[in-house]
Image (cartoon, helix red, strand yellow):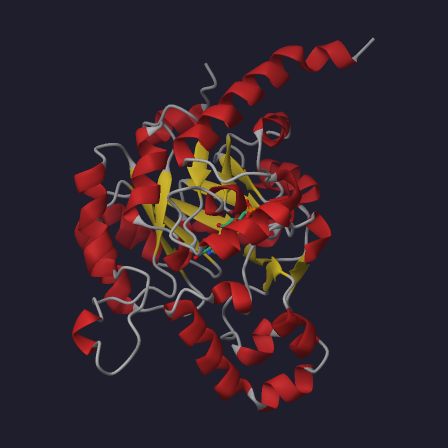
Length: 336
Ligand SMILES: Cc1cc2nc3c(=O)[nH]c(=O)nc-3n(C[C@H](O)[C@H](O)[C@H](O)COP(=O)(O)O)c2cc1C
């Protein structure tokens, strides 16, 4: 059995976390992963707090369910442990309080110093995961008292720093021992899980592979883009930070997405994008609400090159586990 300390801590069967990818996750995806023995995470980033159905006449119906709809639905769909993700790029007390009210078994943070929120999460009875992109961020998170640290490499989909996973993971393992470290970025199959364990990680956090799952609430076009893209098509989109300026306290990150004509155009005209930021922000937010992110900045990591078909989340998990077991069993055969 592929069990690690992470499994004992969280009460899960396999050391695999489905990343909390903001509004691009749903209670169905979380439950599918948790019911299959992993840890599903509901993302809160970009998610409306209330259902906007009553505002139908004023704006197009958002395709993504609200926080108040999704949080209670998770417990209707699974009685296994799950996580709720809260990003510190744009802190929002109302959202954090809603998360605390649900008392999720696990709360995961990312994109900034979690500070006192760690104590508040612990007081609600939740364990805390924090995602970092540098050794310094990891040490700070350890001082804050987090229970698990995700070392996220720059190969990742969505926002990440500039250090690649292979260099970052063993450094973070050394820096925060005995806190369990979870590897993220560049991992989509059992070989990636095996490699992460050999680097000293206790598990993996996967985004892109689970985006191309049956349950992920993104458009079929975006899923097709993931399965047909090559790794080099998943590029860092610096112009995002011109359109959506980061608050000073947030971690220094740049999102990675599958190349589109929108990215091509604005990456070449970053000063113009800064001047036109308000209009572009409205355009991108409206695209997200209408489920058309794939036309603008469809976040995905370099593992797109490893993802060839859309599968049910439980099947993705099962294949990762059985491949990792096989690879680890045969690992020493390479030596002669
Ligand atoms: C579409 C998308 C949205 C993401 N949104 C979040 C988020 O809201 N919070 C977070 O902690 N991480 C987010 N991430 C990053 C993941 O936590 C994770 O580090 C990353 O997906 C790992 O790399 P991979 O995509 O290659 O598996 C996102 C990733 C993707 C692909």
